[in-house]
Length: 344
Ligand code: UDP
Ligand code: MG
Image 1 (cartoon, rainbow, N blue to C red):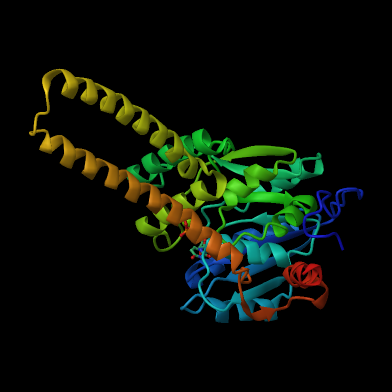
Image 2: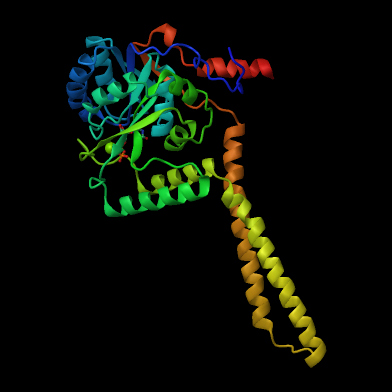
């Protein structure tokens, strides 16, 4: 058992094995999507010449998703499922699936057929030729609204400029991870999670496979605009501290400016005497500086809040039910946690 902060990745030295595959599908209220998904996914998986399993992660669905997953597991035990105790969000649901993925590689995909299962064949081909990460690369986003596309574009540019970690153009969550990359993901214990950033951060030999995103199979996107904004903020905050640090520079510039102004003011008073008006300047500067202070306090609050979230050290997710999960594939979370307990 490596200590939690060891730099060597657990299985990095071993010969790569490429015999089996886990497919991870996070789901929120997808009862109508499961049937069509399995219908298209299963033939693809059968054709790979690999031993496979599918791990559905029921992310606190309120419809019949779990019941359908039970039926599926009874029919074919290679379709497994874990059910989270409530809705934890797609990022954490994916993290949960990855801790249960016990095979040589894992494919992460959406349940709504916006990630065409046929592409997995291509992913596996690249994996066999030695790539450790293969990601689907969206060619166009015509399925999304214009506002969604524009804000996504702005986010990518901002993220790149601020964090120094570049997100590959159009790369989403649809991807194959080799065992090494799965282990690396499982060792990232942060609660406020931004998978796209984590994928880019961890590196490994990667290649993109272009594909066109079809419209959603049933229903609308499970994201609401407010959640998307929150998601973008979390992503930025977990990869850059520039917003936190930039205030010292702004403060420096403002104080220099104030100093120069004070000198000018002094000279003027000495030469021409004091002029009592100037009240507007006073009010304006008071307002300006209280604004700057509140803003910077707010930004410190954003980071402090996130640190508080992490420091609490709660588990990333809670599982209420496991379907067809073999005991060997216990999630690695418990191991990490017990290791930390011993350290303390
Ligand atoms: N999803 C989830 N938990 C959530 C929201 C979404 O597991 O809280 C799943 C959803 O069921 C789907 C995938 O994440 O399988 C992508 O969701 P969606 O299609 O709504 O997102 P979009 O394609 O608009 O990015
Ligand atoms: Mg979708």
